[in-house]
Image (tube, rainbow, N blue to C red):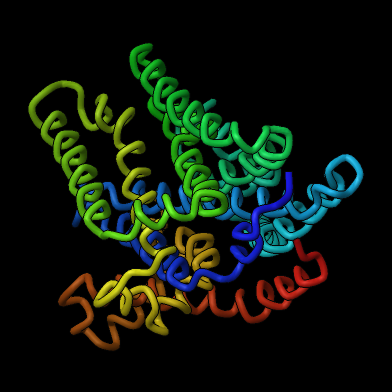
Length: 380
Protein backbone atom coordinates (compact mmCIF):
# COMPACT_ATOMS: atom_id res chain seq x y z
CA UNK A 1 0.00 0.00 0.00
CA UNK A 2 1.46 3.41 -0.90
CA UNK A 3 2.59 5.53 1.99
CA UNK A 4 0.10 8.30 2.79
CA UNK A 5 1.46 11.75 2.11
CA UNK A 6 0.64 12.78 5.69
CA UNK A 7 2.90 10.08 7.07
CA UNK A 8 6.10 11.50 5.63
CA UNK A 9 6.82 14.80 7.46
CA UNK A 10 6.01 13.69 11.01
CA UNK A 11 9.55 12.94 12.14
CA UNK A 12 10.20 16.64 12.59
CA UNK A 13 11.11 17.75 16.09
CA UNK A 14 8.07 18.42 18.27
CA UNK A 15 9.22 21.25 20.51
CA UNK A 16 6.78 20.99 23.38
CA UNK A 17 7.72 17.36 23.98
CA UNK A 18 11.06 18.55 25.37
CA UNK A 19 9.06 20.50 27.92
CA UNK A 20 7.08 17.34 28.73
CA UNK A 21 10.37 15.52 29.33
CA UNK A 22 11.39 18.27 31.75
CA UNK A 23 8.11 18.00 33.67
CA UNK A 24 8.37 14.21 33.85
CA UNK A 25 11.95 14.13 35.10
CA UNK A 26 11.17 16.98 37.49
CA UNK A 27 8.41 14.86 39.05
CA UNK A 28 10.84 11.98 39.56
CA UNK A 29 13.50 14.16 41.19
CA UNK A 30 10.97 15.90 43.42
CA UNK A 31 9.47 12.60 44.53
CA UNK A 32 12.82 10.93 45.24
CA UNK A 33 14.33 13.87 47.11
CA UNK A 34 11.25 14.83 49.10
CA UNK A 35 10.69 11.48 50.82
CA UNK A 36 9.28 12.17 54.28
CA UNK A 37 8.29 15.70 53.29
CA UNK A 38 5.80 15.28 50.45
CA UNK A 39 4.75 11.63 50.48
CA UNK A 40 1.60 10.16 48.99
CA UNK A 41 1.62 12.17 45.75
CA UNK A 42 2.93 9.37 43.48
CA UNK A 43 4.78 11.96 41.39
CA UNK A 44 7.76 9.70 40.71
CA UNK A 45 5.57 6.93 39.34
CA UNK A 46 3.62 9.47 37.29
CA UNK A 47 6.81 10.91 35.81
CA UNK A 48 8.08 7.47 34.78
CA UNK A 49 4.69 6.56 33.31
CA UNK A 50 4.65 9.75 31.22
CA UNK A 51 8.08 8.76 29.88
CA UNK A 52 6.71 5.32 28.95
CA UNK A 53 3.75 6.81 27.06
CA UNK A 54 6.08 9.28 25.34
CA UNK A 55 8.41 6.45 24.33
CA UNK A 56 5.50 4.45 22.98
CA UNK A 57 4.46 7.42 20.85
CA UNK A 58 7.91 8.34 19.55
CA UNK A 59 9.13 4.80 18.87
CA UNK A 60 5.91 3.76 17.12
CA UNK A 61 5.97 6.95 15.06
CA UNK A 62 9.55 6.25 13.99
CA UNK A 63 9.04 2.57 13.24
CA UNK A 64 5.80 2.92 11.27
CA UNK A 65 7.21 5.80 9.24
CA UNK A 66 10.38 3.81 8.55
CA UNK A 67 8.34 0.76 7.53
CA UNK A 68 6.34 2.88 5.07
CA UNK A 69 9.45 4.49 3.62
CA UNK A 70 11.30 1.19 3.10
CA UNK A 71 8.34 -0.87 1.92
CA UNK A 72 9.58 -0.96 -1.70
CA UNK A 73 12.88 -2.64 -0.76
CA UNK A 74 13.37 -6.45 -0.78
CA UNK A 75 11.66 -8.12 2.21
CA UNK A 76 9.97 -4.81 2.91
CA UNK A 77 13.30 -3.29 3.93
CA UNK A 78 13.46 -5.32 7.16
CA UNK A 79 17.25 -5.33 7.31
CA UNK A 80 17.65 -1.56 6.93
CA UNK A 81 14.63 -0.97 9.17
CA UNK A 82 16.18 -2.93 12.07
CA UNK A 83 19.74 -1.77 11.45
CA UNK A 84 18.81 1.91 11.43
CA UNK A 85 16.61 1.68 14.50
CA UNK A 86 19.06 -0.23 16.67
CA UNK A 87 22.10 1.81 15.64
CA UNK A 88 20.33 5.06 16.46
CA UNK A 89 19.00 3.73 19.79
CA UNK A 90 22.45 2.41 20.69
CA UNK A 91 24.11 5.74 19.97
CA UNK A 92 21.58 7.60 22.08
CA UNK A 93 21.36 5.33 25.11
CA UNK A 94 24.34 3.03 25.56
CA UNK A 95 27.47 5.25 25.75
CA UNK A 96 26.61 7.31 28.82
CA UNK A 97 24.82 4.40 30.49
CA UNK A 98 27.78 2.04 30.27
CA UNK A 99 30.31 4.78 31.03
CA UNK A 100 28.35 5.56 34.21
CA UNK A 101 28.33 1.88 35.21
CA UNK A 102 32.07 1.61 34.48
CA UNK A 103 32.95 4.62 36.64
CA UNK A 104 30.71 3.48 39.50
CA UNK A 105 32.21 0.00 39.32
CA UNK A 106 35.73 1.45 39.52
CA UNK A 107 34.91 3.56 42.58
CA UNK A 108 33.36 0.47 44.19
CA UNK A 109 29.74 1.61 44.42
CA UNK A 110 28.33 -1.41 46.35
CA UNK A 111 25.12 -2.14 44.40
CA UNK A 112 26.95 -1.73 41.08
CA UNK A 113 29.69 -4.13 42.13
CA UNK A 114 27.12 -6.61 43.44
CA UNK A 115 24.76 -6.57 40.45
CA UNK A 116 26.95 -5.51 37.52
CA UNK A 117 25.81 -8.43 35.33
CA UNK A 118 22.14 -7.54 35.76
CA UNK A 119 22.87 -3.87 35.12
CA UNK A 120 24.95 -4.55 32.02
CA UNK A 121 22.19 -6.67 30.50
CA UNK A 122 19.45 -4.12 31.29
CA UNK A 123 17.86 -6.71 33.57
CA UNK A 124 17.54 -4.55 36.68
CA UNK A 125 13.80 -5.09 36.81
CA UNK A 126 14.30 -8.88 36.66
CA UNK A 127 16.62 -8.63 39.66
CA UNK A 128 14.09 -6.58 41.62
CA UNK A 129 11.21 -8.92 40.82
CA UNK A 130 13.28 -11.98 41.68
CA UNK A 131 14.71 -10.66 44.96
CA UNK A 132 11.69 -8.52 45.90
CA UNK A 133 13.89 -5.61 46.82
CA UNK A 134 15.19 -2.30 45.62
CA UNK A 135 18.83 -1.96 44.55
CA UNK A 136 20.10 1.08 46.40
CA UNK A 137 21.51 3.83 44.21
CA UNK A 138 20.64 1.92 41.03
CA UNK A 139 16.94 1.58 41.93
CA UNK A 140 15.81 3.89 39.17
CA UNK A 141 17.47 1.92 36.36
CA UNK A 142 14.56 -0.53 36.33
CA UNK A 143 12.65 1.85 34.04
CA UNK A 144 15.53 1.97 31.55
CA UNK A 145 15.49 -1.84 31.57
CA UNK A 146 11.79 -1.80 30.72
CA UNK A 147 12.45 0.60 27.84
CA UNK A 148 15.20 -1.59 26.41
CA UNK A 149 13.05 -4.70 26.65
CA UNK A 150 10.26 -2.90 24.79
CA UNK A 151 12.80 -1.98 22.08
CA UNK A 152 13.40 -5.70 21.57
CA UNK A 153 9.77 -6.47 20.72
CA UNK A 154 8.32 -3.30 19.20
CA UNK A 155 10.34 -3.23 15.93
CA UNK A 156 9.37 -6.76 14.89
CA UNK A 157 5.83 -6.43 16.20
CA UNK A 158 5.18 -3.26 14.21
CA UNK A 159 6.97 -4.52 11.11
CA UNK A 160 5.04 -7.76 10.75
CA UNK A 161 1.65 -6.56 12.03
CA UNK A 162 -0.51 -5.23 9.18
CA UNK A 163 -1.12 -1.52 9.59
CA UNK A 164 -4.85 -1.97 10.21
CA UNK A 165 -4.05 -4.26 13.16
CA UNK A 166 -1.91 -1.75 15.02
CA UNK A 167 -4.78 -0.15 17.01
CA UNK A 168 -6.17 -3.57 17.97
CA UNK A 169 -2.69 -4.71 18.98
CA UNK A 170 -2.33 -1.66 21.20
CA UNK A 171 -5.74 -2.21 22.80
CA UNK A 172 -4.85 -5.84 23.56
CA UNK A 173 -1.58 -4.66 25.12
CA UNK A 174 -3.48 -2.23 27.35
CA UNK A 175 -6.07 -4.79 28.43
CA UNK A 176 -3.48 -7.52 28.90
CA UNK A 177 -1.21 -5.33 31.00
CA UNK A 178 -3.98 -4.26 33.37
CA UNK A 179 -5.30 -7.84 33.58
CA UNK A 180 -1.83 -9.13 34.42
CA UNK A 181 -1.41 -6.59 37.21
CA UNK A 182 -4.83 -7.56 38.57
CA UNK A 183 -3.95 -11.27 38.39
CA UNK A 184 -0.70 -10.69 40.29
CA UNK A 185 -2.54 -8.61 42.87
CA UNK A 186 -5.24 -11.24 43.40
CA UNK A 187 -2.59 -13.95 43.75
CA UNK A 188 -0.89 -11.86 46.44
CA UNK A 189 2.35 -11.78 44.48
CA UNK A 190 4.98 -9.27 45.62
CA UNK A 191 4.03 -5.81 44.36
CA UNK A 192 7.51 -5.40 42.87
CA UNK A 193 6.62 -7.86 40.12
CA UNK A 194 3.60 -5.89 38.97
CA UNK A 195 5.45 -2.59 39.22
CA UNK A 196 8.75 -3.22 37.42
CA UNK A 197 8.02 -6.01 34.93
CA UNK A 198 7.92 -5.01 31.27
CA UNK A 199 4.59 -6.75 30.44
CA UNK A 200 2.85 -4.92 33.29
CA UNK A 201 3.96 -1.57 31.84
CA UNK A 202 2.59 -2.14 28.36
CA UNK A 203 -0.63 -0.18 28.86
CA UNK A 204 1.53 2.97 28.85
CA UNK A 205 3.31 1.98 25.65
CA UNK A 206 0.04 0.82 24.08
CA UNK A 207 -1.54 4.24 24.55
CA UNK A 208 1.55 5.81 23.01
CA UNK A 209 1.18 3.40 20.07
CA UNK A 210 -2.44 4.46 19.49
CA UNK A 211 -1.40 8.09 19.57
CA UNK A 212 1.36 7.55 16.99
CA UNK A 213 -0.89 5.54 14.69
CA UNK A 214 -3.58 8.21 14.72
CA UNK A 215 -0.99 10.97 14.19
CA UNK A 216 0.32 9.18 11.13
CA UNK A 217 -2.83 7.88 9.50
CA UNK A 218 -5.84 9.47 11.21
CA UNK A 219 -4.67 13.06 11.52
CA UNK A 220 -8.15 14.61 11.53
CA UNK A 221 -9.23 12.32 14.37
CA UNK A 222 -6.01 13.07 16.25
CA UNK A 223 -6.54 16.82 15.92
CA UNK A 224 -10.16 16.66 17.06
CA UNK A 225 -9.28 14.53 20.09
CA UNK A 226 -6.34 16.62 21.32
CA UNK A 227 -7.38 20.11 20.22
CA UNK A 228 -8.95 20.90 23.58
CA UNK A 229 -7.16 20.88 26.94
CA UNK A 230 -10.28 19.71 28.77
CA UNK A 231 -9.25 16.05 28.50
CA UNK A 232 -5.87 16.85 30.04
CA UNK A 233 -7.62 18.37 33.03
CA UNK A 234 -10.19 15.57 33.31
CA UNK A 235 -7.56 12.83 33.12
CA UNK A 236 -5.43 14.65 35.72
CA UNK A 237 -8.43 14.75 38.06
CA UNK A 238 -8.92 11.03 37.44
CA UNK A 239 -5.32 10.34 38.41
CA UNK A 240 -5.63 12.47 41.56
CA UNK A 241 -8.84 10.62 42.47
CA UNK A 242 -7.09 7.26 42.27
CA UNK A 243 -4.14 8.53 44.31
CA UNK A 244 -6.59 9.90 46.87
CA UNK A 245 -8.36 6.54 47.06
CA UNK A 246 -5.02 4.79 47.44
CA UNK A 247 -4.13 6.97 50.44
CA UNK A 248 -7.60 6.63 51.95
CA UNK A 249 -7.51 2.82 51.72
CA UNK A 250 -4.00 2.79 53.18
CA UNK A 251 -5.12 4.81 56.20
CA UNK A 252 -8.44 3.08 56.83
CA UNK A 253 -7.68 -0.60 56.22
CA UNK A 254 -5.00 -3.22 56.64
CA UNK A 255 -4.27 -3.26 52.90
CA UNK A 256 -1.64 -0.53 53.20
CA UNK A 257 -0.39 1.52 50.27
CA UNK A 258 -0.10 -1.49 48.00
CA UNK A 259 -3.81 -1.94 47.49
CA UNK A 260 -5.80 -2.57 44.32
CA UNK A 261 -5.87 1.12 43.38
CA UNK A 262 -2.11 1.53 43.60
CA UNK A 263 -1.04 -1.83 42.20
CA UNK A 264 -3.58 -2.19 39.39
CA UNK A 265 -5.24 1.08 38.39
CA UNK A 266 -2.78 3.84 39.18
CA UNK A 267 -0.52 3.17 36.18
CA UNK A 268 -3.49 3.03 33.81
CA UNK A 269 -4.96 6.38 34.90
CA UNK A 270 -1.45 7.89 34.90
CA UNK A 271 -1.01 6.57 31.34
CA UNK A 272 -4.31 8.10 30.26
CA UNK A 273 -3.19 11.45 31.68
CA UNK A 274 0.13 11.10 29.86
CA UNK A 275 -1.78 10.22 26.68
CA UNK A 276 -3.82 13.43 26.72
CA UNK A 277 -0.94 15.59 27.97
CA UNK A 278 1.42 14.43 25.24
CA UNK A 279 -1.22 14.51 22.52
CA UNK A 280 -2.13 18.09 23.45
CA UNK A 281 1.56 19.04 23.41
CA UNK A 282 1.93 17.55 19.92
CA UNK A 283 -0.91 19.80 18.72
CA UNK A 284 0.56 22.63 20.77
CA UNK A 285 -0.57 24.14 24.06
CA UNK A 286 -1.39 27.85 24.11
CA UNK A 287 -1.04 30.48 26.79
CA UNK A 288 0.84 29.85 30.08
CA UNK A 289 1.32 26.11 29.41
CA UNK A 290 2.91 26.94 26.04
CA UNK A 291 5.37 29.23 27.86
CA UNK A 292 6.03 26.55 30.49
CA UNK A 293 6.89 23.95 27.87
CA UNK A 294 8.73 26.17 25.40
CA UNK A 295 10.79 28.53 27.56
CA UNK A 296 14.56 28.12 27.28
CA UNK A 297 14.98 26.49 30.72
CA UNK A 298 12.33 23.82 30.08
CA UNK A 299 13.71 23.13 26.62
CA UNK A 300 17.26 22.75 27.89
CA UNK A 301 16.29 20.59 30.84
CA UNK A 302 14.24 18.43 28.50
CA UNK A 303 17.25 17.91 26.23
CA UNK A 304 19.43 16.77 29.12
CA UNK A 305 16.63 14.83 30.85
CA UNK A 306 18.29 11.45 30.21
CA UNK A 307 21.35 12.56 32.15
CA UNK A 308 19.24 14.12 34.89
CA UNK A 309 17.38 10.86 35.37
CA UNK A 310 20.47 8.68 35.11
CA UNK A 311 22.59 10.64 37.61
CA UNK A 312 20.14 11.96 40.20
CA UNK A 313 20.03 8.83 42.34
CA UNK A 314 23.82 8.76 42.59
CA UNK A 315 23.91 12.40 43.65
CA UNK A 316 21.44 11.81 46.47
CA UNK A 317 18.99 9.18 47.62
CA UNK A 318 17.09 9.64 50.87
CA UNK A 319 17.17 5.93 51.71
CA UNK A 320 20.61 4.87 50.50
CA UNK A 321 23.04 7.80 50.47
CA UNK A 322 25.46 7.43 53.38
CA UNK A 323 26.66 10.39 55.48
CA UNK A 324 30.15 9.78 54.08
CA UNK A 325 29.00 10.24 50.46
CA UNK A 326 30.86 13.10 48.79
CA UNK A 327 27.71 15.07 47.98
CA UNK A 328 26.48 14.90 51.58
CA UNK A 329 29.92 15.84 52.93
CA UNK A 330 30.08 18.74 50.46
CA UNK A 331 26.68 19.94 51.59
CA UNK A 332 27.72 19.83 55.26
CA UNK A 333 30.86 21.85 54.53
CA UNK A 334 28.88 24.42 52.60
CA UNK A 335 26.20 24.74 55.28
CA UNK A 336 28.88 25.08 57.98
CA UNK A 337 30.31 28.02 56.06
CA UNK A 338 26.82 29.52 55.57
CA UNK A 339 24.62 28.34 58.49
CA UNK A 340 21.51 30.02 57.08
CA UNK A 341 21.37 27.22 54.49
CA UNK A 342 20.14 24.90 57.23
CA UNK A 343 17.05 27.05 57.75
CA UNK A 344 15.15 25.30 54.97
CA UNK A 345 15.39 22.02 53.06
CA UNK A 346 14.89 24.11 49.93
CA UNK A 347 18.59 24.98 49.96
CA UNK A 348 19.70 21.36 50.29
CA UNK A 349 17.32 20.29 47.53
CA UNK A 350 18.67 23.08 45.32
CA UNK A 351 22.24 21.97 46.02
CA UNK A 352 21.56 18.40 44.87
CA UNK A 353 19.65 19.72 41.87
CA UNK A 354 22.56 21.96 40.87
CA UNK A 355 25.00 19.04 41.10
CA UNK A 356 22.70 16.84 39.01
CA UNK A 357 22.23 19.54 36.36
CA UNK A 358 26.00 20.09 36.28
CA UNK A 359 26.71 16.40 35.73
CA UNK A 360 23.97 16.12 33.09
CA UNK A 361 25.32 19.22 31.33
CA UNK A 362 28.87 17.86 31.22
CA UNK A 363 27.52 14.54 29.99
CA UNK A 364 25.42 16.22 27.29
CA UNK A 365 28.12 18.45 25.81
CA UNK A 366 31.13 16.14 26.18
CA UNK A 367 29.58 12.75 25.46
CA UNK A 368 25.90 12.57 24.51
CA UNK A 369 25.63 15.39 21.98
CA UNK A 370 28.80 14.54 19.98
CA UNK A 371 27.81 10.86 19.81
CA UNK A 372 24.21 11.80 19.08
CA UNK A 373 25.37 13.72 16.02
CA UNK A 374 26.55 10.43 14.53
CA UNK A 375 22.88 9.44 14.20
CA UNK A 376 22.68 11.71 11.13
CA UNK A 377 24.66 9.07 9.24
CA UNK A 378 21.84 6.59 9.84
CA UNK A 379 18.71 8.49 8.89
CA UNK A 380 15.32 6.84 8.52
